[in-house]
Length: 165
Image (cartoon, rainbow, N blue to C red; front, side, top):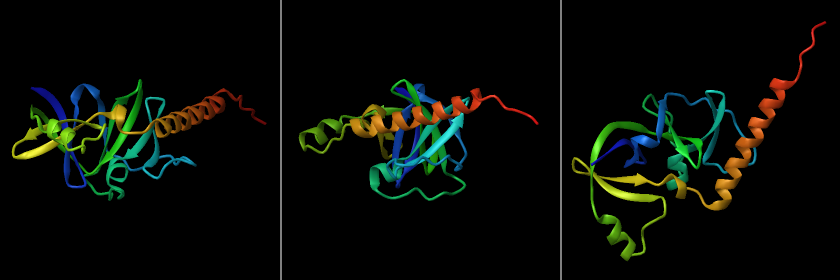
């Protein structure tokens, strides 16, 4: 059994392998980005990097995640970069049991690329996310481009000499 960070979004249990998770932070203060999909809440500065923050509920279910005391951002590894998932609640870090439910969904043509495995947590079914397939190619490229552009602007601002009168 593998260890996972288990969390909720839209009353559904999800999980990410612990090895993909960098940190969990409590914040809802993000730097807005123009011309990005509405599921991108902005970016969060973490260790001198701009990390895009995705509202997972908006991305998967079309509804914004309400901000409460329980909402968190899971910082994780995504395509050689960092990505933040804005989620409703962290359930915990647990060892989860694998199922074979994804085979049945594949046969019914209902399985989506971002679904890695179906796992069991107590009596609940948990969806393990495959972050590489959470976005289509255009969304992935637009997200990477937006962050690269913002980091370049920040670097240029840091390199600009300041003058004093």
